[in-house]
Length: 130
Image (cartoon, rainbow, N blue to C red; front, side, top):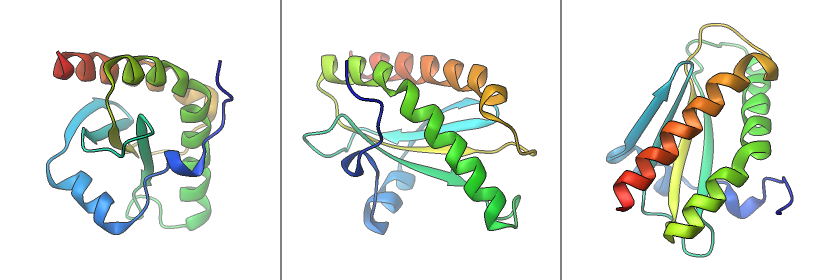
């Protein structure tokens, strides 16, 4: 089993790559999350991810950073499910994990919705790969 870390090569960086992700994305929703993704990833890693929290809804950077931290923790601890599917299908995916909720919540409060989102996402990826 892999270490539950979020390495630098697993993070999507660069304005060109991020803007390309939002040009023609596929998306999966499970309130309060949304995943935009495309299969134009980088070889060598199954996925690259960027975490997005709206600055219109959350004016204070402290609040946005707190929500992003919880999202990274959710992703980090449950990414092994995605690794299994994406490596089996030999896919490279860029994805944006976005938070659209109206209130600030905790890890335990977001966990059930996040797990449902990942199940929907993996079903969508498998359907697209076949």
